Length: 249
Length: 315
Image 1 (cartoon, rainbow over the protein chains, first blue to last red):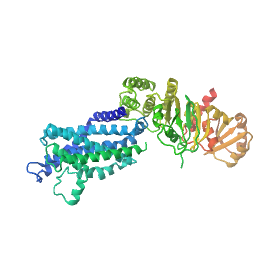
Image 2 (spheres, helix red, strand yellow; image 1 turned 180 degrees about the vertical axis):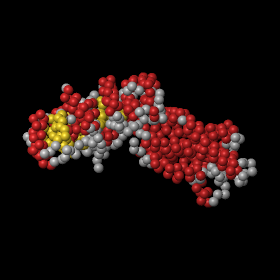
Image 3 (cartoon, rainbow over the protein chains, first blue to last red; image 1 turned 120 degrees about the vertical axis):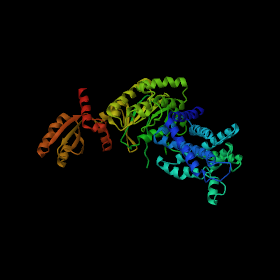
Image 4 (cartoon, helix red, strand yellow; image 1 turned 90 degrees about the vertical axis):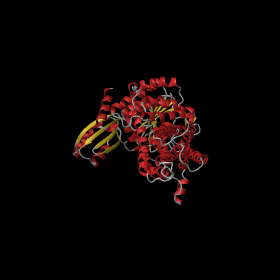
């Protein structure tokens, strides 16, 4: 059981490390968002006197990176099925729970590595100034965010019959979760509908928690953030496990 | 609709058993049920003494499978694919190293061991998959269309590897194929399967001997209903199949029938392009059993048929 989890984790790591160009590629988008949006909207930003837009945006872009990386990691089950490798895994004498755990931990690890690279970049740019405790708290939030969205990705993959619905998932799930999370704008004084949508979005609480942990402006109590996020992560993991269990080989 | 219907089959330990039938006959479904991938809607099956429904994990431990569709991770090396498999089946590091060397040697992939699988040719991938299926020393090895999509040379290689691994490990091998020659060359016993049912079950030689006599093939310039009717009315002609200027007769004594055929043809003014006589092959067995020809079987290609014909004559 444990060795199967490790085996699946190891596979994710090997593929991640081998693909250096993909790591660089996946870091390019967040940096682009940060620099272009940060500079472009910086002048209009009047949230707090002591915070520039780029400083505000940093943890939001961190959340985006984790969301994309984790969701696509979970959805990669679809590609494993497309290329036949999933059969090799599913016919082995290991439980599906172990398979899902390995896949999840592997993707969480690679997502968090990308996140840490981004935090270092933010730190070097003077956009975040966390203390050691804050960094630990950030890592904890990063872990729960990644785990939650990997599970959501796996659940989605288990429900889809072929990878052609991928674009659909991107447009109707991933992008809305990102835009409606408060990654790009403060949650204060939003119109009612937008306020509601951001508040039912679990990523909102993840990003708010990371803002607090990285010493930025935050909205809710970090404890509340963590509780809501963890509740979502646990529910997503359970549904992912159930759906993955039922998925045909 | 059921993919399989009242299939009743017992395969002995150590057999090289073939499931032969056209595409869509239900071969893969049968393998999927036996390997616990698909649950059967009714009936029961056991592999190595374990029930495929109730003792899934025990069954999985004692079987190896090479799927019909590719199932390798292209982004990993051959070595890593095998190592991954060994870990999933609970082999320790020492055993994994030892077995990887062993199985790669068997399929001649030692020199490509550390290359990414995406750089492998189709035949090499197939060999790697066979090697992977052997990593955990299964008691039963399933090969689902092991040579599908390979060129003739690669197919022959795979056959040699299958014989070698059988000689090496002595496990039970169950292979599905829609290639007549493959079943004929490799298998000690064959179940001919058509539309989800087993229509015959015996050794290839017995199946062919069951037909008896010779097979006569004529190529005519133009189909002629009267000509075929007259042929069928002849003494010692058992059955007849024809399509597109090709007439296949099963006869008792080919040597004696050929002159008479020409007599009839001459009388009716039918021009015969070519004539050949051979012993019945599995294709003929299939036609006899089902009344239909099997598609995509290489033995129907003229050159291949000729080669087999000549080989048989030399014996």
